[in-house]
Length: 625
Image (cartoon, helix red, strand yellow):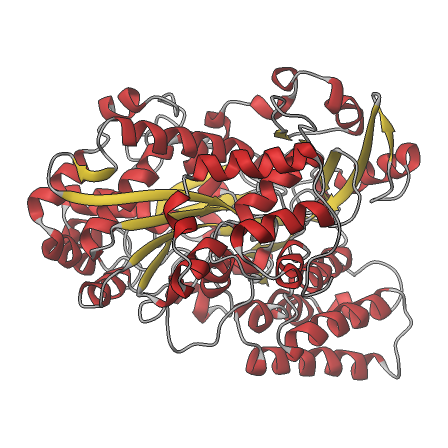
C-alpha cells in the first residue's frame, strides 16, 4: 500500500456504509476545522469507519480504504497498517460469513479441538473459503472469546452486503460442529447463544453479593429496572459529597486496580484532580485474557452499573468526556451498552447537565477489533486515537499524557463498579472487607474442569481450596475429578499444583506462592488434559498477539513456541537441558527488555509449569502423573 491514493474506487454500498457512519458520529464540526489538532481528532474515528465497511462488505477493499482516508485526512499506508493490525478486520477479499471457533485453553478440555477437526473435515482448512447454506463462508481458529463458563464457544459474523440490511454478529456457547454449520441459516434466537446470563452467576440470589447482586435479576435493557434496584443512588450521593470527598473515600477504601496491575485507584484519581484540562476518562473493557469473562457478565447483566460508575469517576476526576473501549468479540454486551448510553442521555444522566447539577459528562463507546495487546493501557489509547494498538514507552504515564496527549484516567470494568458501593457505604467500611492489603470483594472466573463454572464474588482472602469448593469442586462434563494442575491469572499467570490449594487468594498471598491473581482466572485441569498441549497453545497465543513493536517480544515469543514444539515432538536441538536453558533465557530477556506486560509475562505460565511439573519436559509420551 502506497502513501498516495490508488485509482481504486469504493462500491456504492461501501461508500454508503462510510457515509452512514459519519452521519451517526455527527462530525461536521471536526470536518470544518482543518487545524492540525482537529486532523488528529478526526483520525480517532478510523476504527469505527473500518468496522462500518467490514460489517457491510465482509472486508475492507482498497477503494473503501481510499474513501475513508479522504474523509479522515489519513495517509492510505497508515490506514492500511491499522486495518491489517486487527484480527477481526480483513484487508484481502473475504467471504461475507465468518465462523470463529475458540480453540483456546478453556475450550480445549470441552471438545474445541474435535469441533475444529470436524470443520476441517467437512469444510477444509481454517481460512479456506467455501459455500455453506448458499453463502460464501469461511471459518477461523480463534483465541478466547470470553465465554469460558459455557465452553466450547464460537462467534458468527455475517456482513450486511446492502443498505438496509445490517450486519449480524452473535456468539454461540456451548457449540457443536453441527450447530455451527447450521448457524448462518438459523434464526439467532434458535441458537444456544441466548442462554440466561444468570447461568453465569451460580451464586445468584445470595444476599451477600455486592457487585453481582443485580445480574440475572433485572432486565439489562431497562433503565427503570436498574433504578428500582438501587441504580443511580451512588451518583446522587457522589454529587452531594463533591468530587474531593469522593476521591478521599476511594483512597480510604484501599481499592486497587482489578485488571492485574493493582495500582491504587484513589491515588490515580487524586493525581488527576490537579492535572491540566481537558482530562479524559477511559474504561478498559477489552477483556481478552484467556479464561476471563467477569467483565462480560457485568456488561451483559448490569450494563447501567458501568455507565453510572463512569459518570461518578468522571465527576470525581474532573473529566467531562469518557470513552468505553469494549472488545470486538462481545456483540451482545456492545448492544446492551449502546442502549444504556442512549437511555441515559434521554433521561439526563449523561450530557451537559447531569441530573440538573451543572455537571457535564459525555460518553462514547468504541469497539476493538481483536487485539489482546489493546488491553495494555497505552496500546488502548493508540487504538482509540486511530493508530495501531502498540504500547507506548512509560513515562510519561497516561495520567500525565494519555489520550490526545492529555491527562487520562484508565480503569477496567471491575475496578469501576467497585466505586459504587464505596460511595454509598464509605471507604472505611469497604476497607473492612477482605484483608489489610487486599480489600473489598473480588470476582473470580472459574472454568475448565469445575462442576459449576461461572463468575464468583467472594471477599479477598478465601483460599484456592475454598474457591473450588464453592464452585462444586473439580469435575464437570467430561472430567474425572482427579485434579492435575490449576492455572491462576490466565495465560499471563502461573500454574500451581494440587498441593498448593491453601494459597490465600490475595495479591500478597499469590505473590508469596510465586503466582498472581492477574485477571481473576481459576482454571483447573484434570488428568485427562495433556499439559504439553496447553503450554503450546499458550505459547502460540502470545506469538500471535505480540504487536511486534519490540524485538524481545516479537522474536522471543516465536522462539519460545519453537522450543516447546521441539520438546513435545522429541526433536531437541542439542540436549533437553540445553532446550530448557534456552527457554529460561528467552523468558528472562522478554521480562527484562520488552516494552509492555505482554512480553514481560509471555513466559510466566510456561516457566511455572515446567518448574512445578518436571515430568512435562521428559522426552517421549505423555507427562507422568
